[in-house]
Image (cartoon, rainbow, N blue to C red; front, top):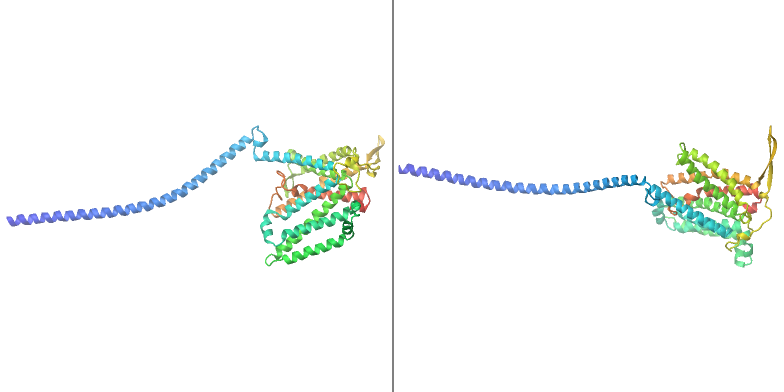
Amino acid sequence: MSKKYEEENNLKTEKETNQKNEKKSNENNNNIIKQNSKEDTETVMDSASAFSDEQEQAFKEKQKEIKKGRFEKLSNAFSKSFIPPQTKSSKWSDLYIRTLWSLIMIVCFFFILLMGHFYCAVLVFLIIICIHQELIDIPRYKERNLEVKNYYLISWSMFLLGLYYFYIRKLKNKLNYLKKYYFIFMLFRYHNFICFMLYVLVFFIFIQSLRKGYYRYQFRQFAYIHIILLIFGFSSTLIINNIFNGLIWFLLPCSLVIVNDIFAYVWGRMLGKHQLTPLSPKKTWEGFIGGFFTTMIWSYYFTNFLIRYKFILCPVNQISLKPFDIFNLTCEDLEFMKFNYYIIDIPILGKYAIPIRTIILHSFAMGMFASLLAPLGGLFASAFKRSIKIKDFADTIPGHGGLTDRMDCQLLNGVFVAVWLYQFVFFDEQKVL
């Protein structure tokens, strides 16, 4: 019996030990599993936290875009209400700034006009200088121009030399009183030779500045500088010559282009439905025709207003630097101020003689060109800007862009006026061209 009892006890103890070992092994396995699960959860949490950070950033950006869109919708809705122009949408604020600076420019223009012929010529010179600066410093090519050796030296020296050649050649007859100074007399006497040798010097600087890898760009820019000089330098010379032939030949053409530009826009906004040209999508045939008739009406009434004042009509034979001296100008009866009688034969009513001043006919011709052909200058500038993918040449004038954007039509119109004066008004090559 005792043996059996001992065997049973041994079996029990073995079972207990086996159970304990199993429990320990199970506990160890559970601990290992827990540790592995903790590590897995930590890695998962880390990746989830990283992913959540990216999601949060994307979510925040989306929220910003949504808020911005809502703000734009609210601002657009608010701009439709009756509020002052300064707080309206950007469209109205741009119109306000554009109108304000237009008035400032008109006031400054008339102030300089009253100062006299010389100061009007200085105004044209400064405008041409600003235009040249805008054209050689177009933002798209600015960085590359800085890489080209002596680019700005060559462009400015070439342009100023061209202006010096054109201006002195045209105006030296009006500066005869300066010939008493020997230095100025020599400058006038050998003007062509001096300008040619200076041009050769600039040409030498250009040859020395040529760099490998930039040859094509440098030659293209060299040709571009010459084109600027021929178009803008020569046209400014003719406009300055128009000024000294009488302020009316400067003031009247400028006003015709401005009036046509304004009323073409007004009529186009009111009635415009048919696009004039793809080069300028906002221009319409209705605005073009409306601007033409409005400009012709303006040319008649504004010319009749200007011919009342002698200082507007009289040419200047000698340049005076004294400001506000134009009110003392006097001149003899001018040929273009005389009346011409035109007989109209009406079948039932008979013949009628209509007196018309010659200058009125000249103003009609200038009005027709300003409204029908001068806008080609604007279209040319628009096509050029599209070719280099820019909206404006510069931001010199707030709300208007650059001076080049404002003067494209004026320059073409000024050249026409000079040719018209030479052919039909003065008949004197030395006086006009």
